[in-house]
Structures are given as structure tokens and as C-alpha cells.
Length: 308
Length: 306
Image (tube, rainbow over all chains, first blue to last red; front, top):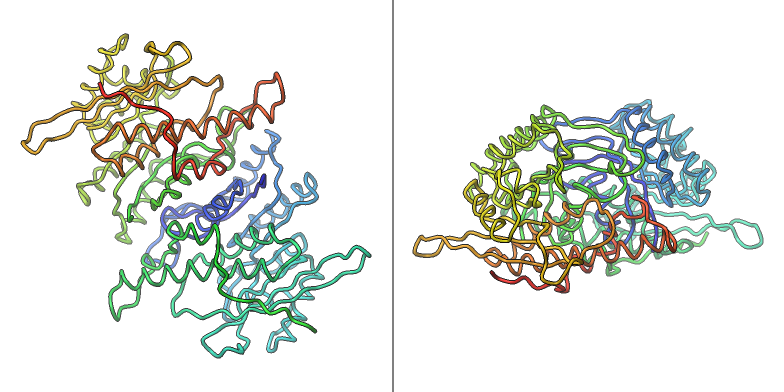
């Protein structure tokens, strides 16, 4: 497999978020990963302390120029996640557009990180940049419910709402949309959360068909950081192997997440001791230890294909 | 295995040098790798063009401070390689010393990158910092012949010279020294280069003994970048698994290099086409494709115990 990904995300010295979360799993699956580190921090910002440096939009451009001058700016995928700076994000869009001119088959996987549970945790002025500039050039997006609502201006209270929101997102650009988590009630009870996916494909006769799936994911009583980054990276990998089968791609992706999270929470509890809440360092994803699950994930959940 | 490495090396967006060369193989072998990127460049400096930014000694300190404030400055290994800045290198030494106070068993694996084939490719003022400060706190050192000569002030013309130079290096600090390549004549002929290793160990009765080994490696007609970084990382891994068996550790390490290089040169020649010399971009190590060889290296070289 000869597949090259350009991933523009954070780097942390310690732990697994951003490029640290995305690179190893993709490399283990045989992808060549070129990584531009948008920041270098000691660790993620959920710890008591964090320190480091950020890359400016100009510096991002300089790095891209280096790649371009050597005529090696040929990518099959671009992957982006958490960004706080509008000019940085706009530079990313310029780069994606140029890379798409160089390779029209390029797939841009975008996690439009804006916030969760009703509140934004990035500057508000990123919202219009995502909505008006980023999403239109994205091919696969992985918003949570809040981000999907923000991007479309539509609230989600029912599964029908969610399907309409995903259709609106398709119209804005991406042919593949996965709402990674929602507040919708699960058929399996309140220990489960609902995720939904939608993939639009062009049929041989020129018409468009949409496959929609629903997944019920067991909730875990802990705050993990970096899981969204791992999710987007693994969705890239599994949609690469199953480009017309969102059901399978999602089953593999969510299964990998399950294995990594399960291993992580077990280890975190072991480190914290009985009756104690694990700390952020203890909750770092057990990425390296999950290599076998990343390479060959045992499927532990079934996606239901929605018939509408 | 619960083993944490702090690797302070370059990052390149594309390709495999510095942390890009060291991190994936170590992670694949189960090591937790914390990485501080000393620079971020588009690609290594052997390409026609390269662009990027460097980390200052102050910025390095700031990152380390973040780790320390969270009380997670606990490492089993430190790994360093190519550095051009003396104040950066001195800050690395300070960090290593502090980490060793916290964990006296910490092993510092140091590739004292200064030059090759008789000429330096870092600023000259790096030499005294390596010679007088860095090597003293290193536990495993991977100089080539030129670097070993620079550090000890002694020329190597025979195997006997090389053994004496390795003993001098032991006296300066590290209990393990591997001369990764030399100009010494191989008994197998000019298509082979000679590497040597020496490990100092303390016997139960308190006396020291040294195991010395020699390896002959087939020469490859190409310039690879990042192989030294891969070598140091893999030597870290295999001495971790074979702490008292330099022969086994070196056989594994050199074998991994062999498999990665072989896969790389085959692919590069294929990309370049018949009769054409591969470009730096085409010669990037086939790291990701070599995962299995990294995990389970088939032994293809035998180290002779001297």
C-alpha cells in the first residue's frame, strides 16, 4: 500500500493527542504520515500545567513551501483537528486546495473541533471559517452533535433531525459525515450513546445514493483526551480500505476505540488505586500497548443501517 | 513492559531522521516515547531545499518545565542525536543530570554527531561540549570512527587502536561504546565495513570486565540519512532486552538496519529507474514498511567476541 497522509495537528512531548494520537496508529496500518506540528506543548491542556510553543500561519506556510520546492507535495489524504487560530486554519484551507489541484483524488478528513455539550472551547471566530471555508473542501468530517448543530444552524432532538443535519452537511461539501457522539437516547439504555454516519456515493447511472448508519457506543465514566484525534485517524484508515462501505468502516473504527479505551481505563484505575479517580497523566491512551488491536481490530459492535 | 524514553531530536515533516526515525521503531517495540522536537523542518538537509524552524535552549527548558511541573519527569532512557547549538546541548546535559537524580538507573543513549570521513558537519565549538560535558553523563555512546577520534584525540589505524580508543571512552563515562563504522580493513574484503563494540561490566566481586566485539557489515552504494538515528534507537531497545550481552544487542541492531536499508535501496532503485541514481526523496527509509523486521529482526550478521 502506497498511501501518504499530511497530518497537521498538535504535538505533545508526553501523551497522545493531535499528531501523537494519529501518527502511530496510521503508521502501524502502513500509511506514510507526513506531520506538521501546529504546536509543541509539554502535554495536553487537561493537566494542571502545560507549557510550549505554537506555530504561526506564516511558519506553517514556510514548512509547506519546503515540501513544495522539493516537488514532494503529493498526498492522498490530509488530516486536521484541533486548531485555535483563524489565520492558521485559513492557511490550511489554501494548502488543501493546492494539494487537491496537484491530486484531484485527495481526500481531506476534517475534525471540525469547536466544542462539546453546548459550549465552544475554541475562539468563536473559528466557527465562520469552518462553516464557510473548511467544510466546503472537506471530504470526510467528524463533528460531534454540538459541532454539527453549529455548522448547520439546526438543532438535533431526534434521529430524524440528525439525518437532516447530515444531509445539510453533505450539501456543504463532505460526502462522508460521522456524528461521533450525540445526546440521542439509545435503544440499549442510558449507559450507551448514539453515533450516526452518512455517506453519499455517486451511482454508475449518475444518481446519488446515501447510506446511513447508527451505532450504540457504551459510555465510559472518564474524560479521555485524544480519542477524537484517534477516531478521525482510524476513520481515515478504514474508509480507505472500505471506501463504499460506511457500515464496515465505522464498525472497525469504533471497535478500535473500544479496545484502546478499555485498556486505558483498566490501566488508569490500576495506577490510581481503589476508589480514586485517575488523573490526566494516568488516563493517557494506552496507544503503544494497543498495537495489535489497531492492526486488526476485533469487531465488538454492529452498525445498524438506517432504512428511511 | 513499562519503559519510558525521552528523545530530544529533530522533527521533519517528511521522511525519517531524528525523532521521525527513532520514535516509530521504539513505539512498535513497546516503548513509551516522549519526544521533544529540537527543530521542525520540511525534510532533511540532504534534499535540494529545506525550510523550517529551530527550538532554542530556552524553549527546550520551557517544555521540560511543563513536564516537571506535572511531576512526570520520570524516564528510564534519554536519547539524543544531531544537535548544532552548544547552549541547546548544554541544556540537554542539565536535563539529563536532573533526570538522573530522580532516577539513578536512567540510561542516557547519546549519538555524539559531529562529522564523518574526516570532516565535521557541525560547528566546531560543539566538540568541547560533547568531550567535556556530554560524554561524561552518557551511558551508551555510538560514535563513528571520526567522532571517536575527535573525542579522545587519538587516531585509529588498527583494530588495536580502536580498542584503546573505546577504553579511553569508557574512562570518560559510558560503559557501552559502539564504533558504528570504521575504515578498518575487513577480513571479508573491501565490500564490508567494520564496526566494533565494547561493554564494561562489574563482576559480583567488584572487579570490572569488558566484552569487546567486532561486526562486518556489507557496504551499500548509497547515502542514507537517518540510519544513525535508527541505529541508536534500536541499540537502546536491544540493550534494554539484552543488558549484559552486547553481542546479542548488536546483532539485533545491525540486523534491523540491514533489513530496513535493503528494503529502502530496492524501492529507491525501482523508483529511480534503471541506470539512474536515486534522489534523497526516493532514498527515505522504508520505515513503516519494515515494521515486522523491526519487531522481529532475523539475525543476518554474527558479532565476533574479541
